[in-house]
Structures are given as C-alpha cells and as structure tokens.
Length: 221
Length: 263
Length: 60
Image: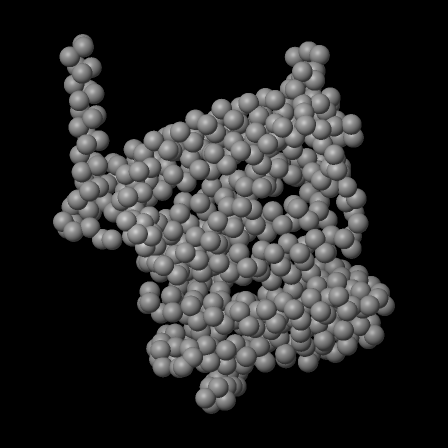
C-alpha cells in the first residue's frame, strides 16, 4: 500500500518536471546573487559559503513544499486519500518522502557542484553532503505541516514561510556550524548527532500534525 | 454535580461570562498598583549595580516581560491542545485573545533587551546573545499565529489551524532554545549575561518580584476582559447575550434619566 | 533612596537615555493597554446590540 502510493507520487513528480527543476534553478540563481553581492571574490564566497548554502537550502525547500499538496487538493484526490487510507498518514508520508527525494536528497547529491560554485574546500564536501542528507528530512517534515495548513489559502506562499522558517532555525544552526567546522578541520560529531535527533523527532511526530493539518484544510474547502 | 459536568460547564462561554464579571477590573487594579510600586521601588530605591551602574534598572522591565512572553506561548500551546482534543470553544477564544498580548509583551522584552545591550555591550543589537535571539524567534512565532488566523476566512477552520500551530510551536520551543544556546557558546562574544547574577541582594530582587507578579495580574486582566468581549461577539445572536445587551441599555438609560432629573 | 537629588535621579548616572527610553515605552504600552481594555467590553456590547436575535436555543 505504502509502495503503491510511493510509486504513484514518484511518477507524478517525474511527469511534472518543472516542479523539481524550478526550485533547483532558484537555488543556483540565488547563489549567483550572493556571489555578485559579495563582490565575486573567491575568498569571500568561500568564507561565507556555509551560511549562504544553508539559508538558500531552507528557502529552496520551502519553495518546493508550497506545491506539495496543491494539485491533489484542487482536484479532490487529497480528500479521498486521507479518507480512504488506513492509517491516514500513509499517503501523506509517501508524498513527503518523494518531495524530499527531489529536494533535500537531490541537493545533497549535488554537493560537489555546489561546493565548486561556492568555492568550498574539497575536504569539507563529505561533511556538507552528510549534514544535508541528515538535516533535510526535518525540513521536509516540518514544512509539510505548514504546507498542509496553507494549502486552501489563495496566497499561502509568504504565510508558509512566516509560519515555518522559525522552526527551521535549529537545522540551520547545526548545519552551518557543521560546514564551517569541517572547513576549519574540526570535528562535527555534535552537529551530526543533533541533526539526526531533530530529523528523527520530526519524522516520527510530524506526520500526525500533517494529517491533522490536511483535515483542517479539507474541512474549510 | 460530578466532575464531567463541571468540566462541561467550564467549557461554556456563557458560564464564563456570568462568573467573571468583577475579576477583570480587580486584576487590572491590582496590576496597576503592583506595577507602580515595583517600578518606582526599582527605579529610585533599589541600589545601582556595581558593574553596570543605573542601566541595570532596565531589568525591572526586561525580566518580567521576558518571563511572561515565554509563559504565554506555553499557555497558547496548552490551550491549543485542549481545543484540539475536547473542542472547547473557550480554549480557542483564549488562544485568540492571548496572541496580541503575547506579541506586545515579547516586543517590549526585545526592545528593552536591545536598549540594555547598548550601555552593557556597546551595541544595540547583539546576535550572539541567546536570549535576544530566542525572544526574536518567539516574536515570529506569535506573528505566525496572528497571520494564520487572519488568513483563514472560516472561523472554525482558523481556530483548529491556530491550535495545531500553537501545539507544534510548544514542542519546537525547547529545540529552538537549546540550539540557540549551543550556538552562542561557540561565539563567546558575550561573556556575561545580563540577568544571571549569582547573588542579587534582596533590595534588588524584591522590586523585581513585585513587577513580575504585577505583569501576571495585567495579563490576567487582559485575558478575562478580552475573553468576555469575545464571548459576547461570538454568541451575539443568542437570547442570553441579547438579555445582557438589554440590561446594559437599561442601566445606561436609567443613568441618563437621573442626570436629566437633576438638571 | 539611592539618589541624592531629583536631578541625579533623572540623570541615572549617565544612563538616562537608555533607562528612560525603556521605562517610557513601557509606560506608554501600559497606558495604551488599559485604555484599550476599558473600551473592549463596551465595544462588544454595542456590536452585539447591532446583531439580530438568531434563535431561541443557545449553542452549547
């Protein structure tokens, strides 16, 4: 059942390529803005790269989350999914998992490209990749709560950012310090454990909140 | 009357309206007395701090508002939980009236902290201080609740959405606080915090205590009075509210009639 | 009393700007809050008076 949902979501995502591509293009576009803003100096960009990277990953993730429930909400599929599925969070978790594959996981895989563009020393890449992979599940899970709450609203985008960005701060803090400590050649065990803990908590607890939020949004439609 | 019955009666907005009459003004009066006493005591009579001099007197505003800002958000989370589980209308009204007050108190805590930072650390805004940062995040959390309610047109859906968000916030606050504090230990920019003094003499903390109690009384007065208004607004079509309105009109007309006779 | 004179009280040992900024803002906040509270109940009664009676039975 979960697998069937997963395959369905995967196919739907692959079919609408722009939903995967647009956030990624946004990510590289904003990196370019920062590079220009910092004067194009390789040294400056390298120095601020952990912060730039993580802040932009948060925003990119929010951007791709905005459409997470939108289409299924509009055509009524979401209502059927939540009503018929037993337990109700199976289709919801499948959706979030697929979203994560095409946002957080994909960005983690792109670390070498990002590292090159941002002038990050190659020694830091493994840590950056690992923290991106470990930290982004929490982003997708927490963001899905906000996406579900705002899906029925006409202008939900900015509201979604307002509601969810404060909850992203811990991931940002541990992710940025992990990247900059790795660049300085320091150990990053504490950050990795903290990110893993946050993601674990989000993965186990957030689905219930997402389902409740979906139900609230369906009721008001 | 058994316990479940009591629980249901407590959930009735009408019951709340009828029993809460004198409490709002009572708490407001108490709050003003306590806040005036505590503030004057702190401003003029408490000794100056040996290190910070007189700027330390900002503590008498900063600490009470900061404590209240955090505990109001805790209460929001609890009210949200009660509303989601038992669908108690009064809990949602509570959630609604507490948000603007909490936002104001948080803003004041943030402002006083920033001003205090200027003479103490030489900067109006210090990102390295965990307290200021978690206060700022708290302000954003309050604003999120406020904006979410404003954005959802149907009251019932808005109520449940806000309750859920408040609950999620309640669970997230410890994580946010912990991460911010951990982050601050790396920076070591701020070596001594404003408020954590190992030994504060009684002349210093007694007025602080008075102000803390005073601001809680102000909070209670705000909640009670605004909740009464919200009850009337939401139940305005019912017979008992119309009765309340009628007695109000009568009292007013009787009052103006008296003054007319006097003239 | 920890000040010798009224002037020194207002001077706050050179920290007058900071201390009075915070306490002034707090006083303004308190007064604004009390005025607003004072109006709350009357405004609610007036709003309810404009509303017509919907039904005899009251929702729980």
